[in-house]
Image (cartoon, rainbow, N blue to C red; front, side, top):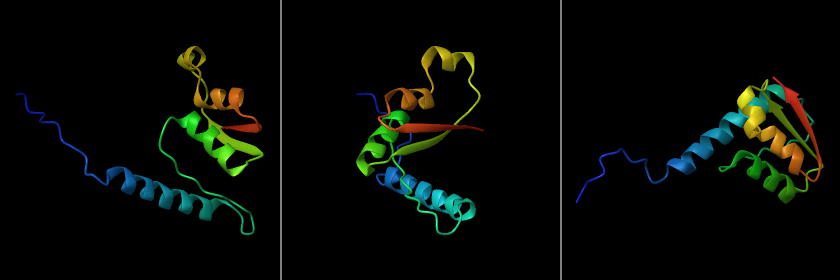
Amino acid sequence: MIKDSRPREPADFEEKALEQAQAALAKVVDANVPDGTSVQQIVANGTVYEEILSKASDIGADLVVMASHRPELQDYLLGPNAARVVRHAPVSVMVVRE
């Protein structure tokens, strides 16, 4: 029998990582979104474009706003997440270049 010697992540790793991501997102929103602006913060785990499309549908969003980097050749061949969201979203998508 071969023993797997790779380190294992703690059982609650995913839960803690999502909590830390939510806390970090809340700080970004607090620092950058004007008071009185309605914001819903959602942190999800999974395939980026699938999660964005799923959450937008779940909450009844009428607009998805997402950032996109300057594309490289590999992005044109494989398709970046922003392009997939734009292609498949049933609502408008605003892509903001970084």
